[in-house]
Image (cartoon, rainbow, N blue to C red):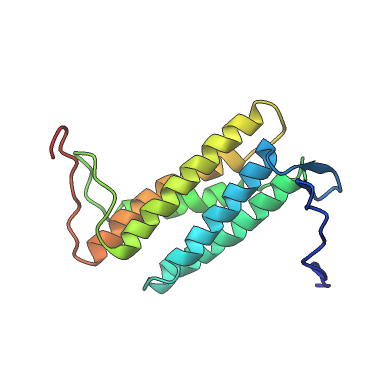
Length: 181
């Protein structure tokens, strides 16, 4: 692979615009750039989560998701780039695998527990925000076909993983108590 970023400081964004992969300049406050930025933020939160002690299988899955998110950001930066359905299938398989080891939920749970599980909940909420932004973007512009379902499934997976992380650490889930203070 050649040098993709030979120069970091270009000063081309000093006027409040940034370039898409096709060379088009857009405002940094455009919905597309906000969506790309949230995808990057989501990936960064996953990187922070990877600082936690995780088993090799979960670590490998999360690293794979980080690569997927980089692909998604690239697809958003180069419309109408493709973002493969195979990535959805990977998430569906992981959700099924991890969810089958958990007891069914009878009540809502509060985010928290161990530090790793809590970080997983933070990543989940950023994935949900990313999804909402992509829905808004899709109302006016093209988005990667499988991008929305990917973010939806990713947040589901992260919820399941937060439960697994708590269970593996012997941490009880805290149930929501409506009106309870």
